[in-house]
Length: 129
Image 1 (cartoon, one colour):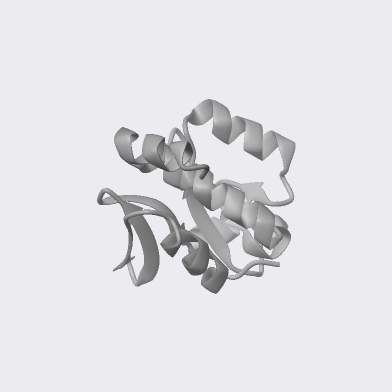
Image 2 (cartoon, helix red, strand yellow; image 1 turned 90 degrees about the horizontal axis):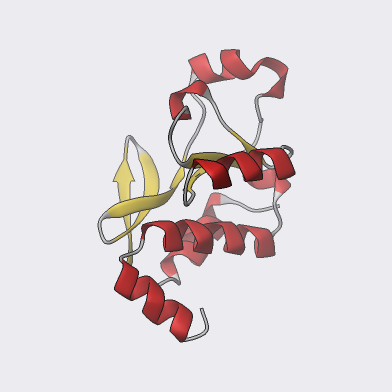
């Protein structure tokens, strides 16, 4: 089970990441672009999800594109979900209590790669990231 503190640790270990609060929650950015964020559900979203609304912590994560979003939602609906607020947006929501630390690190790194400037991402990958 992962926590927001785990998200913070993994995100801040990546190159050129900053933590900045937004909407009262922690966000992590690279090149000024948000790639993962603490994302408590709003009352409207809880109502939308009904009994499927998670009780534990939720993280938002950018993905490469809508195809990747669909693939994640289909492949692991226990961990990944979305709400209508994110319709048409290349982001997923992650039930942190349903991912282990290794999977969390992969999700955060993929989100970072989706948002990092191309030269920074290429240098990171060249160094074995």
